[in-house]
Length: 477
Image (cartoon, rainbow, N blue to C red; front, side):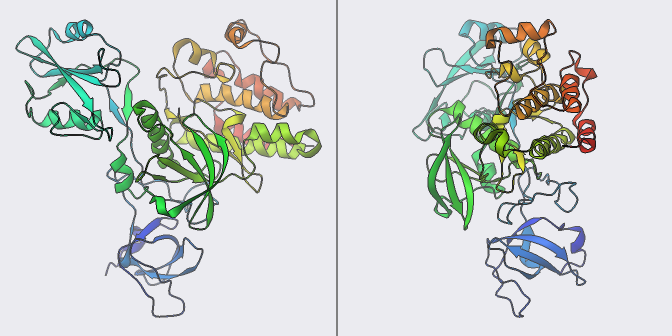
């Protein structure tokens, strides 16, 4: 028995049962091996904790019958016990699992010709390599390796399960795994992969599906029930579903054969495993055991903020509601800022409204660590800061610009920004100093906040922590 358990499991941590525990007293909480439990509080006895099952039942559990969910990274998320804004969602949704990390592929050069690859490698050392998209076989790749002053080009093929191989004998989940293998041994190649020719910008990322399974984020398909379609997203359909008697949203990846779409889908899920805040949409898990892949999040009953504003209008949405939306979103962004993440697509369409009216930031498909660069994604021009459009460089200050546009959306009750300017002309107008007028009825303090967010010099824009404090001082009346 451990006598130091209070240092090992924090209140708010989600644990998994190691053994069956039938319970022997009325205050015990029975559970089975593999069940998920959330720690509520410690007790005087360091070997016992009060916990909650996913069905809401609470009771005492023995410390050595459970373990905190872990991932290969071993990096824990902030505990809700210490978070300034703990997640207020059902216990089956609240998760203190560790992050599934993105893995960079600096050696992947995308659309590179055979001649360009050879030019990059010709002055290198034996074992220098890069990977490019195949010119002759769409969807395949080419591994280019230098050995004895000659570049060998190996076709990287896919099988029906979308695994990759260079020899039809050994298959790997993705390019990262393949390269990792041949970095350890040549295994039939002309040389072991020793030195990569790295890209200087726009580095690609990959996520391993096994990491979700190993970290406890994988949800068996049999535990999910689809109810009705509630929307469509970039990757496919969004459904209302049920997971352990709790309503959830299920995002479905329709085309599993599209490797880029699959990776973008898993990248969004990976980002969501690192984030936990009351004003961010909470991810529950990923279902990978059948096709298509499901990304499961908490269900936001009132839909997107932009649709909510447009459908209800001034007759229903009060000034206090507008201010509350702004505050909620800003709090979520304060958290992202504190975690060194940039959203890059902050807009009313990417904010969802819960049953209780709380606003939560969603859609983390473009979210990256600070000062990330665009990876060829189509940018939402009307919401994107001028320096991000010019230089493809994003920061929390470019998010602040987008927040200013979002405030304009809120106080205009969902109107499209720059209503008298075409998308093609927006960037030019903004560079020349054009800024939108205040929406009808917008408080002067809020419009001042918008204009400060739209400062041409990013360094002159406030951070979200400061704006959050300003919002707290503003009255809706």
